[in-house]
Amino acid sequence: EYNINHLVYIGFAINWCLQYSPGNMNDMFRRGFMCSTIRQAVTAVENKISARHELHKEHGLWVTAIQNGFVYDLDDFMEMLGSI
Image (tube, rainbow, N blue to C red):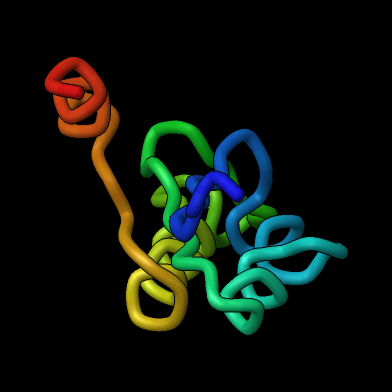
């Protein structure tokens, strides 16, 4: 009805909730939606070794960029919204 075709996921673990929970990016992409995120608006499930450099977050962002949509920087996203 509203011709929505692009979802932006934020606020959860990019490498877990946003990829594997019900209604996740992969599910919605299969339904025809482009699914993106904002780098500064997600976190990740990390461990003692990965936490310092947010390695699992970076991997989750990479997966999003190659599989589902785009990874935006917050400043760029806010600027884009301001031009609408």
